[in-house]
View 1 (tube, one colour):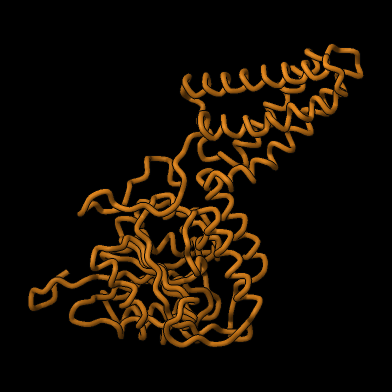
View 2: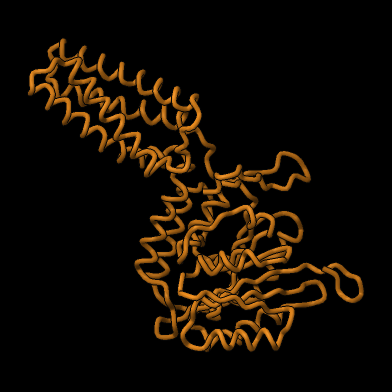
Length: 392
């Protein structure tokens, strides 16, 4: 946008999710507006998530006090921070978009520093880290600190990023980048979800240290242990299908383990009913392959489960047939050689576990891993547009 003198200003849309923050909302908004200057214009979008303490009335009053600069949206029922941000992001018109909690834990003056790599064209997303040295930090809960560091570590393992603070509120995006992302989480699962998705897009991500003035539960802090558990679930839900190979294999051990137990159980049961080794092994493997496929879709490769193309079906059937032939042949060979049937079958299943993972990951469900990506030539935006229907 341009100021009255014709200078081009950077426009920052600040989305403020609000639920029962009447004590701090006014001061938060005024502090955000105070960072405006001759080069920076602020657009504020308050999303009231069905507050019951009068926050909505305060928000409407502020929109009248600052006409054209403050927009107020309201949910008719409480839906959570992620849902509020999803609503607010759709109304943002700035060059860049950021999140600002209404509880005064974060200092809006830090936003100017977070904007610098974006304005300079070096970054697509900038995160403010509470754990990098910068500014003042209120000393509070040790276990919260430890929990945040643990969640960041787990997230980094799945995304192949080296962030120091995945759960930070301060995330600033290029608006065109943010508009390519579909947000599904309604509560605090927004944080690991959005980090997973920007990692999948291989954006240029920067971190900058910020101040932090955490509040106590008596002062209104809302996040709890169940949100931490949800964060772990979200890290796996939104990352497993594109996690680094070692992480995917660890997850596949669970899926393969369940399938292997099923394989062995059916094999021994069929043998006890008088069926031959070949028939027992083939039946057991076929049923285990179906179970393995279903678990892969539900837990590991869920976002790539599309079977409309004959080519994909053919590849899957080919992989199953090759590994099935190996399983039956390996088992039969060692049983004929005098090895105890359950040991022969277990050995074939263990080798098949590795082959199954390689076949599914490389051939059936191929997908690029997450992680950092650098432009290949000067001037490239660093933002690869996600294919339709694959933002998850």
